[in-house]
Length: 71
Image (tube, rainbow, N blue to C red; front, side, top):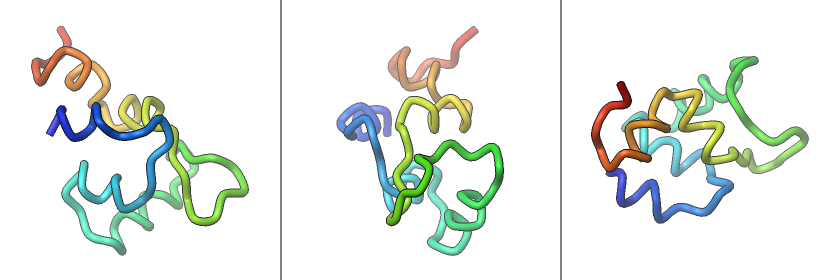
């Protein structure tokens, strides 16, 4: 999965969030509505800065270290 994430552009879509988190469409839009979810303001369709999303999801250190947990 980290190879897939590393191949993504710096700004990702909700569909890519679904694939990373292994969740469905309705759940992804539900979490995207949360106040703390990192997304670009006034963006239709929803665009998400990849690094901020990975930090939000707690995956940034995991992916950065090639699949090994930070710590």
